[in-house]
Length: 484
Image 1: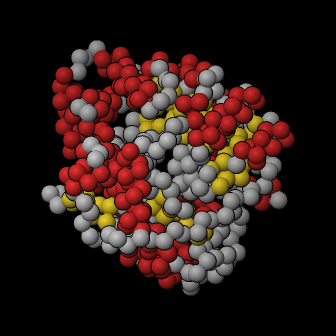
Image 2: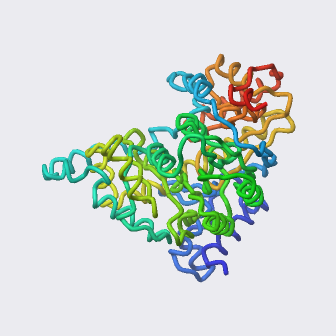
C-alpha cells in the first residue's frame, strides 16, 4: 500500500503533468498543503523530496518549491542479444585509447567515468582528515591495516542494517577503491581460463579485469531498464561451467538499468542452487533518485554466495580510494589476497571518510547530490530528444549519472567519438562495453560531470554531428577475431 507522502507526490506530479502547474510556477507551500490535505509537515517534506529527486520540482532557498520542465518519455534502447559462447577478452588497448581523451581539461567530458569533483565536499573531507589524524593514536597506524579501520567497518555494517541488509563488520574488507574489491573477489573464486558471466553491455573495467586475469567472458542478455535477463543466465548456467558472475543489479554501467527486487531475489536463489558466486558491483548505490535506497542482491543472500562491492569514490570522496567488499563466505580468502597485495587502504583516507560519517554529514550531502544529478538527467534527456537524429533511443535510469544512447544503425560510434573530440567533446563509444566489439552505434553519455551549460551545448553539437557520420570498417578486437 502506498504511503501518504507517495500518494501526495503522485497527485502533485499529475497536476504538473496535466499543466495545472506550469514549468517555473510556484507550488503550494508546506503550510498550505498541511492545512488543505490534513497531513503532517513531514509527509509534505517527504513528498517534495521524492518529486525533487525525480527532477519534477526544484527547491529554491527561502522561496519554496517550483515545477520543472519535464521531457516526454524517450524510447528505450533494445535488449542486447550477445553471443552465448565463452570468449577471451582483449579490450585494454581500446579503453586506453579512448579514455586518454577525457583527461584534457578543455574537453566537455560527456565520456568521463566520474561525476564532477565540484559536487563533493572536498574541503570538509580535508578538514575532517586533519582533525582525525591529529587525534589518531600512533598504534592505529598498524591496527588499521588489513582488513581496515574497525570503526569504519562498523559504520558500514550499520548502514547495511539501516538499508535492510545483513552484513557484519567481520565480513567487510576495506580496499583501495571498488576496483580492487572487485578484482580481489575475482581472484578469490576463479583461475585463468575460467568462464565468468557478465552483462551485455558491461562495464569496461570488468572487461579489463577479465583480460588481466586470463578469464573468459560469457555475455548475458541485458534489458536496458531491468538488467540481466534471468532466462538467459539460467540457460548459460546449464550450457557451461560458469565459475562466477559479475553483475551490477543496481544502476548498471553503462545502461543505468536496475533489476526489480523480485528479479534480484530470484538471481540470488538461482546462483545459490548452482553454487556460483555473485560479485555484486554496487558503486552507484547511493545515487538513487527515489526516497529509499534499492535493496542490493546481497540483501537476499542467506548462504554467503554474494560478495557485495562498493566505494565512496562516486558518492563522497573521489580520489580518496576507499572501497570495500562484504565478502560473505569468501571473506578470509579476500582478506588473504588483500594482505598479499596492497596490504591496506591509506590510513588518512580511512580517517577522513570515518570523520564525515560520524558527523552525520554524509546523508545530507547525498540528498543535495541526488537532486543535482536528477536535474542534470532531465536536462540531458530533453537535449538528446530534441537534438539527436530521429530513431535515437535513450535510457532514463532511476539514478546515477549515465545515459545509454542507441543511435540509428548508420551512425558509427567511433566516427562520432572522433568528430566530437575534434570539437572539444568526449564520448564513450559503445564498443568499449563489449568484449566482442559490439554496440557500434551506441554511446554512453555522462550527465553528472559537465556543467548544465556544457551539457546542453555539448549534446546539441553531438546531435548535429551524429547526422554527419557513417559506419566505417574498424578492426575488431583480437578476441573477437579469434572467436570468429
